[in-house]
Image (tube, rainbow, N blue to C red; front, side, top):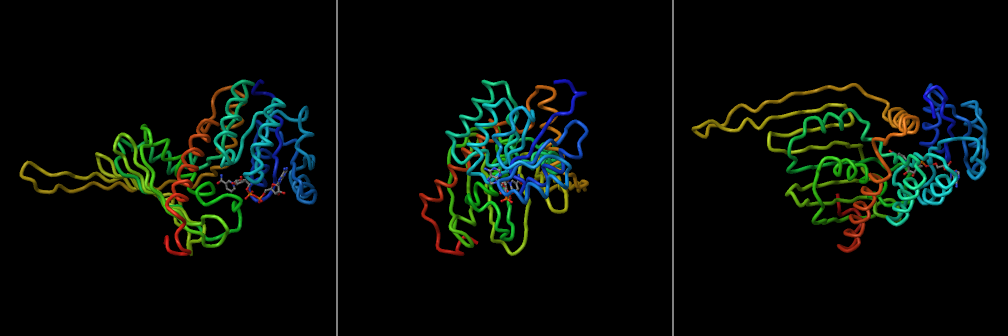
Length: 324
Ligand code: NAD
């Protein structure tokens, strides 16, 4: 594919998030949004009208019409739709979680590799400037804390909060720590749905780094921040105000007197992370080079998320409301 030919694209599933995927393809020079696909014909027609493209209700009619798709349907349909699209030779950007099971994700990763197709997973926080700043200021992480708490929105509830929200921080964690996971402790409770809505996990790595993650979709207010303690001090990022704090420990002088700690406050501008993610997908397909978040990355995040969910099951679900 040459960079002069716009990539023919479609979005499968144009509910809340799929609408924004369609908006990005519609607005980008390197892509042509050919169709939106939704089993709800009214929704497909509404968005086709908004983005001046075809409305389809069956993704199986896409082969021959497009080169690449975003799959933005409920998570329990990602495997079936992803397998069909890859078998039909279409590059895929699959929303997170990539699939519901590790076996399904492994199948899609192997299928994409065998067919020479791009499989990208929608871990969009990797495109967030605060996460990129965190990665830039990292030396040897020793302690990582992450909070991702949101009020209940009624979306993503076909999976538990670990696969819905914590998986973002698990993916970031795996991109920060270059060591194997050696133990997982976790607890969780239901609050608003039939599945775990509030979860906490403590993950220890073979190099001694420990991470504590909290996720909730039943929080009175949104909180999204991560802090890393490392040899040289700490780095703290806040996704809400786009602030990065980089602190030096200061240490002590020869007499043991504490030295002044340093603190740099970096204010970053808000970036359209979904636009960056879709742009990266188009770049990867057009250039034939790996995307920033590959299918293998989505698989690793899923594996860890499922291990956390199992650890919660093994610990026994806590009584409602007692996990904080
Ligand atoms: P949604 O329920 O708002 O939209 C899903 C749409 O898919 C609906 O319009 C539905 O009619 C359609 N659909 C269902 N089955 C279909 C099929 N077989 N073929 C075509 N269309 C079908 O859901 P949402 O909140 O937009 O979430 C969709 C996906 O995006 C989920 O996997 C979710 O985890 C993910 N998501 C990711 C993020 C993120 O931060 N990366 C944020 C929100 C949602």
